Image 1: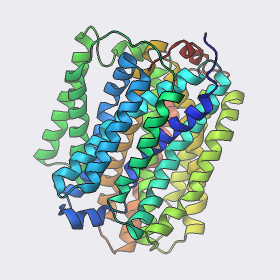
Image 2: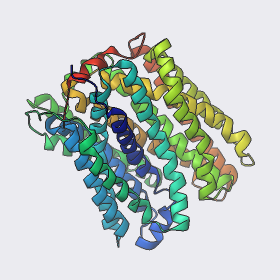
Image 3: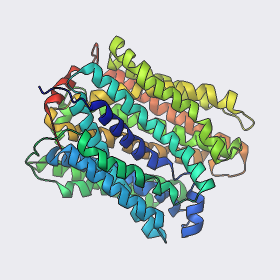
Image 4: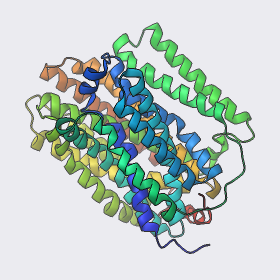
Amino acid sequence: MSAPSPRRWAALALIATAQFIVIMDTSIIGVALPRIQEDLGFSQESLSWVFNAYVVAFGGLLLLGGRLSDLFGARRLFGAGWLILLAGSLVAGIAPEVWVELTGRAVQGIGAALIAPSALTLLMMLFGHDPKELTKALALYGAAAPAGGTAGVFLGGVITEYLSWPWVFYINIPIALVALLATGPLMPTAQSQRGSVDLIGALTVTAGLGTAVYAIVRAPEIGWASAQTWLALTAAVILLATFVAIQARRREPLMRLSIFRTPNLAAANLTQLLLGGAWIPMWFFLNLYLQQVLGYSAFPSGAALLPMTVLIMIGMIVLAPRAINRFGPKTTTVTGLALLAAGMAWLALISPNGSFATDVLPASLVAALGMSLAFIPSLGTAISSARPEEGGLASGIVNTSYQVGSALGLAAMTAVAAANGAAQLGNLPALTSGFSAAFIGAAGIALVGALLAAGTLRSYTSAPAAAEPAATHRGN
């Protein structure tokens, strides 16, 4: 086993920055969407694809990113991802019309799909020698995700109000340049592995996920019973089934299906999928409640989410590692999901005449505490359960699980909210009823996650020891 890198904590800062940016890019465009629509001529129906083009490319190509990370080295893929993200950000910022904007967003998503799994692989390489250090590193990495999501809302409001909407994309450019310069000196290197790249599999799973998200996003508008909705859902199922068939037959698949027989890996990924499916809808509709019901403008709305962010960061950095060491990853994960469900059920009690102090703050802090406790142990279990040489694949799978859960959960809860009155802009009681229904639905997802985690995760007394062999895996 080689000695730990003396620059590993500086490298961790860059890895956490990567997680911050790829998550921030999902949320920073929210406040800017009306300006983008006005300037570029998006229809009301197509506007959501400014968000979806990024998420579908990101979530759909994460498996490919993980495989490429294993084959060509995590350091190379990390740098390539930043370069592609930079290019996509530039295109999205200068876009003169709709198709160019969506192309730029998709390119951003491709860059993020290379950055995210390679970043996790690099983290495992740098800290896998010591389970305690690994837990701390995962906590800092995990805290960067909610910080990025909330910062995106806050920065999006500031930038849109005081600069202009293209700057929500341009902000990535100087960060990407610094990351490109720092990657070489900070990140570990090793020989590339031999193997092939399953491009057909990557395209099939991306098309399947994209079609599923499209069907669910469009269903509230055109009807769940419409032929178009069911045709799209059927096509998604066929594409995803084809992907599974391809993986079962290929000698070097994009995703080795037998990896899910690894103890805890499938269970931890299911937990991450349901965690994303619960958390993202809660964050999304809480922001809408603040703006559309309580009347907050973009800047105060973003600021109102800062207490949640602070608690999540404290929870992930301080509380979660201690809970894992004392109670084990399984108990910590189940407790976190249960608290998240309780916080969202409490949020469902919002009223049209409510206030931030009584209707939002206490319940959101309970939910934030739950998120911080559930995220770190389930993420660490998913990554450390795989073989060292498949660290990139495991990273890609767990990132895919969370992103797919986020996209599908948000689409489903959007349908629930619309069916319960959230489409009636200006009607505060109807909006509140719709948002409340979405919180109840998201609470149900978190509760299902807690029950499944309790029944499927294996117990450990501390952070998974399987993380230790990761120290022997060094990639570019």
